[in-house]
Amino acid sequence: DTGVSQNPRHKITKRGQNVTFRCDPISEHNRLYWYRQTLGQGPEFLTYFQNEAQLEKSRLLSDRFSAERPKGSFSTLEIQRTEQGDSAMYLCASSPTGAKAFFGQGTRLTVV
Amino acid sequence: QKEVEQDPGPLSVPEGAIVSLNCTYSNSAFQYFMWYRQYSRKGPELLMYTYSSGNKEDGRFTAQVDKSSKYISLFIRDSQPSDSATYLCAMSATTAQKLVFGQGTRLTINP
View 1 (cartoon, rainbow over the protein chains, first blue to last red):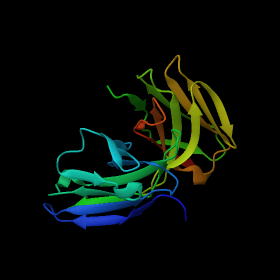
View 2: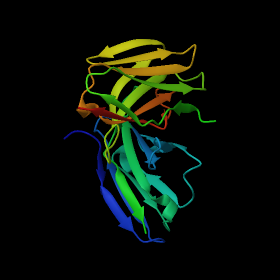
View 3: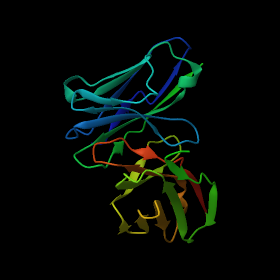
């Protein structure tokens, strides 16, 4: 499978714990995006990388959230001190030079 | 007011019907328009991609963009039960910018 890969698919954590998600984009895509989707809503932009450079961050990305893309390959999204409001589907997308974005299957986070 | 408005439905139609899904937007800078299909608990799948105004057809799917009215549509002909999903419109101003999504329309095709 040469699509966008996200791990884990589902994460249940206790409030206050830290979690980390991984995204492996399509290999030739230099752009990588993170989005968050809650039930009944469309995805909302979190952050964007071009190669290893983080070029844009949404106001949704509080200081408890951090994302990295070392060496411009895979990316990680870490949430520290999780809160119940963080429960959502976290989607990663990658894009070549055009505007098309290809999404992974997402990581569904449940904070209990 | 949201940048992109989409009727969340739900929309339920019989198999074989023509389905029309729509989005309106407020940002006149948007030039790239996409439709995604999302099955329950899965990631969005890109269906249609259009640049600027005009029509694009791909099999049973037709995407229309009217930039003067800030209105985009997706038509599904000969709808099938397998088309039952949530359909998301998305748009961006440039090739590098983030996508702005509508809320999604939940569609059910009844056999």
